[in-house]
Image 1 (cartoon, rainbow, N blue to C red):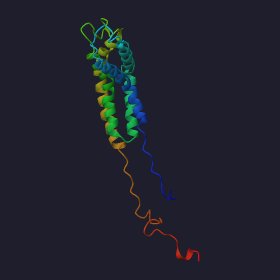
Image 2 (cartoon, rainbow, N blue to C red):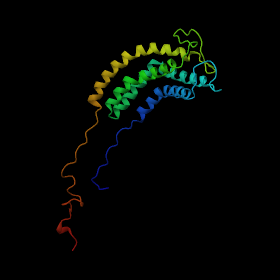
Image 3 (spheres, rainbow, N blue to C red):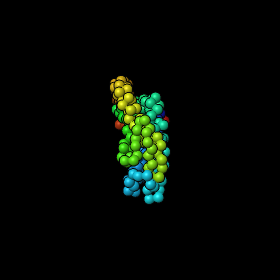
Image 4 (cartoon, helix red, strand yellow):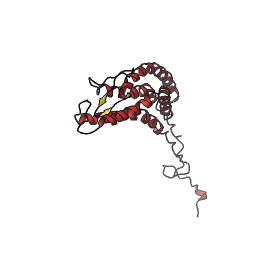
Length: 208
């Protein structure tokens, strides 16, 4: 490398943003992975095991993990804001704005939809935790009832996240836009030997 060549500054990584998204959406995606497996296995919702396999316990544990993350409102909003700031630091203002707008919603909505398409007539879902549900060989406990509680949390969270999205989105537009690359000075390469007039050896300095 020539002495006067300056290495380009590496752009900030999106890895911290991806880690925040994985924490908030990973359990919800796990819930849907189990549900899609039961769809593929043609398991109709019911109290008995599906093809001798206890899918209910796996779905219950995945739901409980998701509710532990998404129904903790300060943690949910705080981690969403952190993910937004990480995207802004990587000069992705649109990504950061959409993160704060959609991440809390998807973290609550995806498992709620999984419960909605899985419940059956004798499997109640109540915010008062009334009734019990036996699904695919396992007692679901509060994992299904928490879907009704998450619905109320979603209604309370959306106005706050929308307001924060507007405020941080405006700041991100002004302060987190991608930096324009400064064009090189037209005389920067005049001294290079590979340029048409780049030979800087003076005739009187040449060896005889």
